[in-house]
Image (tube, helix red, strand yellow):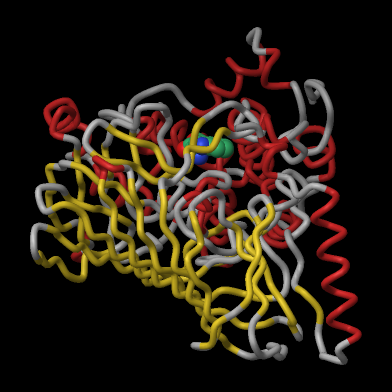
Length: 463
Ligand code: TRP
Ligand code: ZN
């Protein structure tokens, strides 16, 4: 499915307008919430007018039938008076919607599920919405051609959500600027397991089915929520300060994964030394084999790998826990704050473990024949199809190295740790970052780095 199919047709926009007019004629206060948060790359992602605090998702999945039944209880606060609001949901059938326990009217257009509560919502009010839904969840194709959403595996399925795939398996405010805590409870046939983010709070079986309840206590962007259903080898360990380490590995990949996964705690410790305190209350990995995707993803507290990872990829996804999952971009334009940092972390790991220095890596990329790195500036990807290209990853990391060259190692580590601390469990933009750097190294002039390396077209000239 192409992205354009998900855009709201003009007719739907007119209908929405008609509803607005009707609402005003009725003398009600408030207006519908927006059907997007004006993300420059994914304009329909997320919704206006409310802020989610918690998702309680209760899912039941049968792989043989590819059938999902879900109940999403979404607790949110109205940020203005609302007569209606949208949730994002792609595919699936909506069976019912209630708001504050009362039946609500709802309609669907593309990915927008528009809910009209029985009573208007007032600015500041906390309200609970329950959506019951079912069907076969979709695999979505991103503008760059990658598959995300709900991905079948040989023995189950895997939910992956960057940038917008989580709307294929639960309704929500699917934009990184609205983070929330989660309870994700999954029931599967009892010979299978279900793994998600955070800590396993209970496991029970009843009549041939097993239920796994997972709790994510720290705020999470929906694109890093995950569920993996299948056969897994689950290991429990404990890292430094008693940090629980729970990994779920596809049995086919268990042997190949063993050595690299033994390094998780060491990488977390190294991360704490360099980036500051680990932001979540557990860690681990999921190694699974989706049929149509071959990328790793920094799903919160428990990144997903499409097979046994190498050390560099493990370092990358664990570094994202600080940069991306804890400090989350406020829009998809700010992706380099995720990928530039995670790539830089791979380089730092090499430097700290007897490999080439970051300076060497920088010089190789700068001197070498790598036209793709200069295709566009890291802070202004050319389109949604390019948010995971080399300028975001490598050139993003090179921006960080330019800062390190300018301020020296001590201040550089103060900056990257302080940045993780200042926006811990929050969201931040490129402008927040440049302001933070300037404030932390007040005697230095970063104008040229921002202008040429971060925002400038083409390959920056040698200084
Ligand atoms: N964020 C992933 C990583 O660790 C890569 C990725 C997966 C991605 N899906 C994406 C990047 C969608 C951008 C858009 O590098
Ligand atoms: Zn990454």
